[in-house]
Length: 152
Picture (cartoon, rainbow, N blue to C red):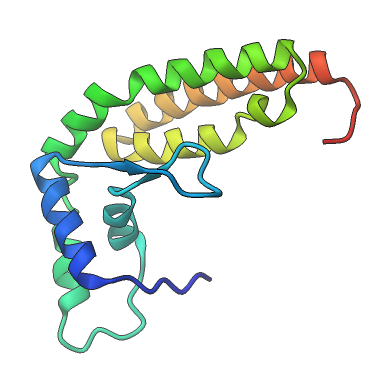
């Protein structure tokens, strides 16, 4: 279980921005692909309030369903090149035995989270996640070919 403490004014602003299709990415240590503000919308959507006597959290959750169409359009337009770039970069890093840059697992998790919002229909989501899994397996296989049994 994670307990998340958030500045509710910031969360409200980001939820409004998401509804308008605005998302930003900021550098943050530990987040190799940056911190994307629309993660707040995902947290609001999926988290469970331990205490919400006035229903303010429930009201925020209602803003996340259905998935904001403007946000979906922004993500679909903005992020595919990053997925391709990261995959190409990871493959090149694997060829050069750069273990840090070649690790795709965190990236695949992030892309899968994005796809959950983009494809609410289970069959489309499953197909998209299968493609991500195949891509990850291919990159991991290349990493394994280059890195062998070395500890990482």
